[in-house]
Length: 264
Image 1 (cartoon, rainbow, N blue to C red):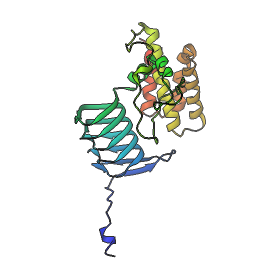
Image 2: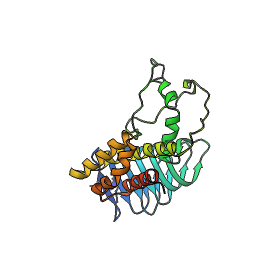
Image 3: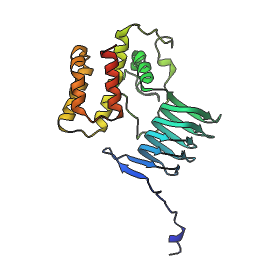
Image 4: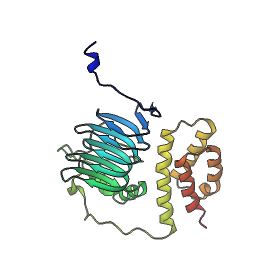
């Protein structure tokens, strides 16, 4: 009995939501502060009115982190998206963040930050402009046989295999300069449809739609993937009506299509 009193106590505050998604990833939504002292892989971490802190020597992977105040990293974080007023990397911390939404960023001189794109569209356009160079990178950065690599059709969080390795700069066949983007409505339409495709593919995997709703989402994705602009213009309002009720991301796609397919 004496030993049992020395065990650490876990307190789950009132209002905390803990769930496991279909991929087996844990999500935590808490009204206050959250301190992570154990390594793990998460779907979502959300602090409604506080901050999240990752302690030293702790490795955390997450699809998304949303903190009302700060995201403090003293260990290692690999995440697809982090949204907070402040992102703070303490001494020796490492963060691999693809998309960040923060008012301020504070880095200790001994910390390391990789990624840091401001939006999904910015990330997609950068990868699209350097698609050929990315295909020419060697399959391994540790001396294995070199060869072209195949890119996935959509971006997806890289979970469960540790921090990504840095890419070698000598893999680029041309000087690292941004080409001038094409002008005019056609290029804007291509970029918008590509962004809509990424969001819809992610939502199709994440949501558990059934029956007519799932069928309508599949038809919408097929039209966008095939860039069937004329048919998409005439049918997308009805397809979204069949998918309703729409979450925030699906409503965002509908607004994107309305803007580029039916310009005022």
